[in-house]
Length: 159
Image 1 (cartoon, rainbow, N blue to C red):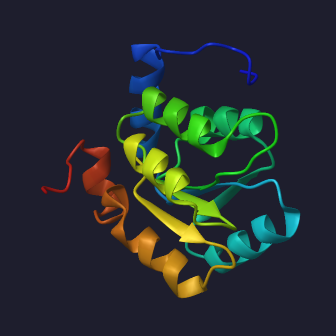
Image 2: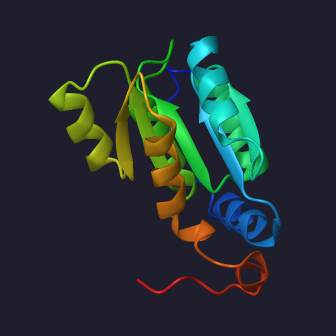
């Protein structure tokens, strides 16, 4: 899973397993993929308590944690070493079309936002971020808007 690897399709079995893990988990899980240790720590600290927080410092670790933990929400930095956050977003959405990913960036270059939207990002937060803005995106996550016992039964929130 390095930046040079061409990856254009996901294994349907992996996708099914990710979605099943998310349905069966009791406590919500949030994955933070951010190379800046301070930003990663601040974001994680603002979310802890009600959620299991998983942290990744780079793209490879983030993709592996996504498969292992099947998070409800991903906060993903656009500027990661080795592989752009937009490429990580593309791969996550390929693994799991139901992924809820919010992009983070210190800049709000229009191209970054447009590409993130094209690849299926749920939103975009400019750093430095406010805790209220982060929590607003968490509250909008479809898989968190439902009681965990209903999720375990395979029910989905209607849109």
